[in-house]
Length: 117
Image 1 (cartoon, rainbow, N blue to C red):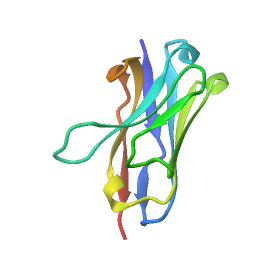
Image 2: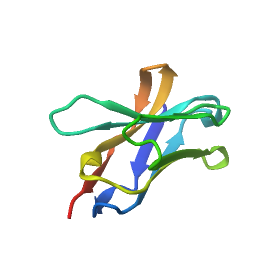
Image 3: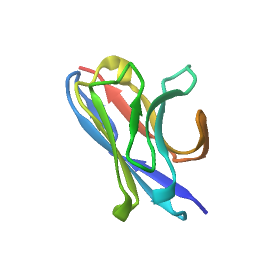
Image 4: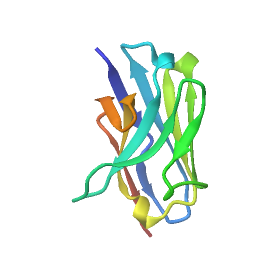
């Protein structure tokens, strides 16, 4: 029933910016904390950022100060503004609904972000 669809990924040069979007359907979006998770080739998933139902945010140290998570409950959409991108940010980025801390019950298909000159 729950569907999450990410968009906005692509190829960007180091230092550039991208804004990822995650459109949610099939659930009451506003009552769930939402998370961005990324996975680089050959590596396990890495938590990036979370926004809870009250708008509080958390970030991984690797992206803090560069990325901003936000949500628009009226549009059932989650965003990730990514600035000052580095090659190390290259990964498949997933939108996920948080079930509990460190656990996610629904995932999108992912959107690829490639940072390269």
